[in-house]
Length: 404
Ligand SMILES: Nc1nc2c(ncn2[C@@H]2O[C@H](COP(=O)(O)OP(=O)(O)OP(=O)(O)O)[C@@H](O)[C@H]2O)c(=O)[nH]1
Ligand SMILES: [Mg+2]
Image 1 (cartoon, rainbow, N blue to C red):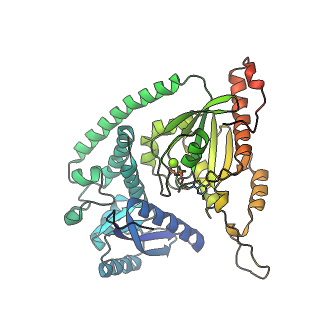
Image 2: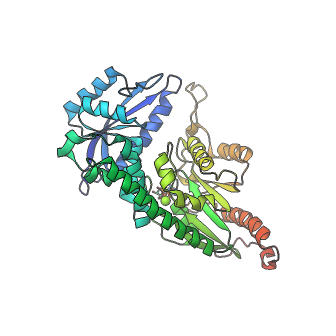
Image 3: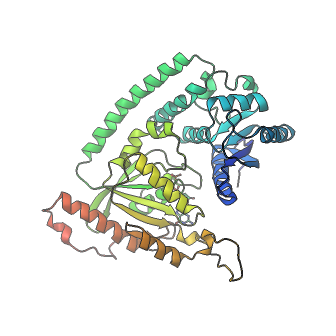
């Protein structure tokens, strides 16, 4: 999977903790996601360490015995980086670095680093830089100071690399400068959005890597970057789309993830405003992912956090071409997993339980596109009619065969 020729991959280990009543399977799912994040950032994962704890240790997050086990492995195997699935407090981070003496990152750090690598426009870069400084400020004192020789690589890109040792005052000044800069851009963006007029606005939302950009490209014939890594999209793309006779604006934007760092939610205000100000949300779900129901839950939670949870929505279950069904033998008493449920059963379950119009498609093979387009058309039309009540051209019927 990794192309070692092009990049210098760092050797990393992962550390995950669950409470006593969470199960092993969930933990492995979380670790799979963390490994994907690590891979996206540019690391190869050599080993996973996990522990069940009623409460994380206030000093070292994991227990002392586990910390020692990790230290031994890291020393023996020349590991550069330890990645924790949870956000460490500044003091836990300091204690662990003192104890183990390699670079330690947490999930937030990793996500911020990926965002820093991915940011293309100066707008996105400014947002990420602000989030990074906000993360850095409380963790500034002597962080990584003993690691001078290993500088660079994951978690060290952006402000971390050059200004780690500088005075907090300088960081604070930089934060307020970036905030001012963002305020100006936010205003410009708001004006831009206003200038788009009264056209119905539809936003693609969903967990990262579910296929939002692929779907955007398929519906709007645009060319948004899509790939099998997390957070391929940071910058927002807006396209005018016409389905049947009905024009509307379609927005593709940043994906969500479990435990999205709060610093990012704050600094991506304007990006998320696209979602907040949309008339209709298209929630894209990757049905081929074993944890897709958790992902739906995370997305709904984030929507609630940004105050966008009461909007009309369409649920699109994507990647049906990649859905694999493992029928369970009758004498198989192992617990049922998502994979033991057929696509037909999923359809029935979700259509019954979702209060939103729901459709199952493949953005790649375009399976069920006519059904999906009809659904989008109907929902957009409802909004359009309430906005332009005297526009009678709208009452023409949608023709499935029409080239869209
Ligand atoms: N098999 C299959 N793969 C798909 C489908 N739709 C998208 N993909 C793949 O899923 C990966 C992620 O697609 P993207 O469109 O980048 O996903 P995204 O939701 O925009 O992701 P972020 O921008 O990273 O949040 C790519 O490798 C796509 O080729 C589908 O219907 N079937
Ligand atoms: Mg994308």
